[in-house]
Image (cartoon, rainbow, N blue to C red; front, side, top):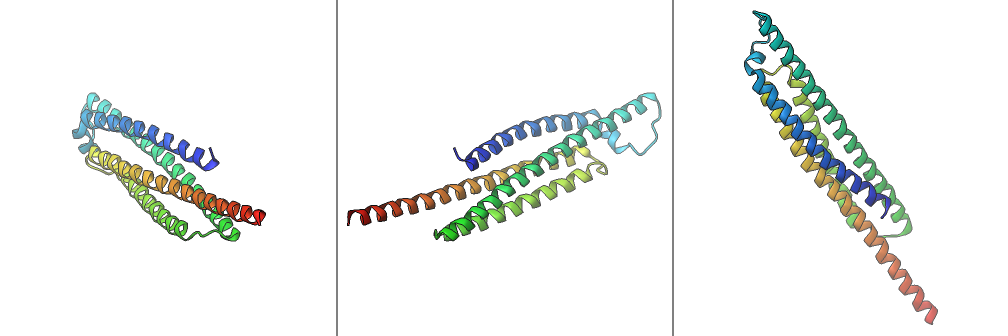
Length: 195
């Protein structure tokens, strides 16, 4: 396997692990909401007794825990975007070498432009998810914001799969172009030797 194929396969496996993380995050969010949505709405008011004080502390601790998990997830997916971006940069470098070698890269150029658009869309989706993460503390119902975050990250994952798939297609097309050109060169060289 080539270096690009191994890297793309590794990123695919990492995306599967992120799906497991999102389900854990959803479970924590549901437990947070089930524990005390009314407490979240009344968190500004002073606790009336010891039980209210304990419940509000537990609620705040759960909020911090959920935010920490969300922040870790955002960091992880940010790294995955940067890794796929570096793959795209290497693809562009390889494209330049192919142009210098005389390959026809018109179709590859179109595919690279599409991949850049998909990358920009993924980055925009990640920024939207970051904005939802910032709104959780000020939300009157953290469960709703957490669910919006989970939905945004689900859409982001789908976009990353599209971006990843387009990079795989570009690599495949580059190999096909290089392979067909090598085959043509072999045919031309064998024709010259026969004459």
